[in-house]
Length: 365
Image (tube, rainbow, N blue to C red; front, side):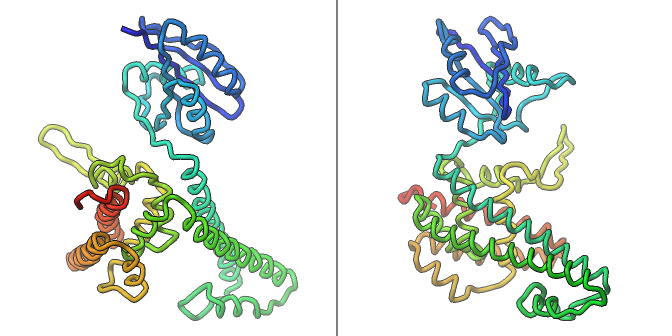
């Protein structure tokens, strides 16, 4: 039987700590080097004499670049989910982390993460940049709102952040010029972020049409509440729906299933796990709110008409089922956010079905 040396890498921006788990059971820290892929490859090639080398490191800020380069050089490398690496002992050092990875790689207890293609990773960066812009917009609006509330100024209309609202803010007069300067500064920030969001939205629309994910984006838009940006986020973040054998696997990946703490005859389930991809979970929960409405408008029908008959049937079933579920749960006086989560979970199942149809046109759904 071929010997296998398992190597754990604790990867940081400036350094990489290398640990090794020998076939005979010995686990030790080999060396600590600067973050240099060439030096890592040199070390791994030295370990590859008379044994096969397997490598593992935690997914993190340094990204999958190292994973791609090691696999390209012929080493079996896996990226693992940090939250799923078993914890042992109380000490935490770079050496301990690297040895733990090597040890659990040898025992087979590590959970791999999905590594997207370079194109998909780049597209994810674009949609996440838009999310960052939206967060910046919320902060900018909050600062302006707090400033006005502090001065006792209130906009009477219920609709905020429209052209009329911003015009009202702009025409306010203050007793001291310093207050006008602050108002103008906050207002410029709000308007600048709005321009940034519009620019990134347009960029996503253009890039999505040119990407290999275009069929998936068009198919997902057949669903109510899933317009281009939401569909692009789903396609770019999930990457491939083939990796989920059943809808519940996608629901679990998105953290939309309840956590469980059961033992013996006692069964206890709590709130959703919120594990996995938070970007997809956020856009799903936003899309789920639209299912409180019955029927579909002209815009949805137009998007749905650009898809196949099978996808149209899936979207129609989703509309009927999810609206009825929303109505039924509200009649039972369920808490509104819990209703939204329940709708989001089932919506993930319909998204899975469309994903399977687009990626496997002959599959039954």
